[in-house]
Image (cartoon, rainbow, N blue to C red; front, side, top):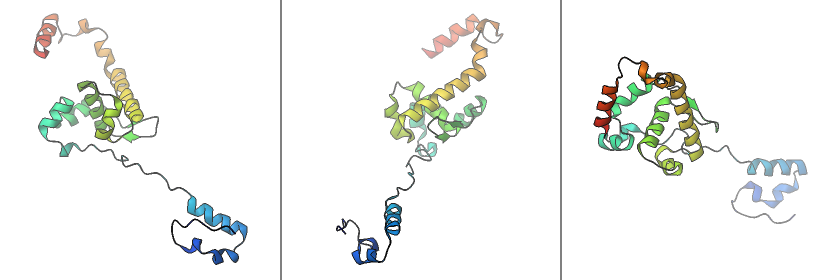
Length: 163
């Protein structure tokens, strides 16, 4: 029998141990030892904790106040979102990703450390978020002339405020 590599010292490294075993038992031992465990990503629960972000930093990063986040999530009726990669997250976390993406022109991989998700999952989730918002509220923008609360004068006033 060829000598075993001694990375770890345990009962499997003891050569006389194998003399009493059949080949199938030896094979089972090696396969059992080398079987990879299930990967647990460090981002399984996400990294972002809004309670740890101070109010000013939150406002700078997301362009909203912390206390408005829950109201906005409920008003937009954002459900739990599951990406095609199997990542599931709350509507609030998905909304944060969308707000951050709209606030600054970041590449997806720049947002990975902030949210603790892979860039492909971020992209998929934000796409689903905006798709949900469009399918739920898109009809409101189909014809802005039909709204009594939105006149040309109001639009001019809003445009002056935002500049």
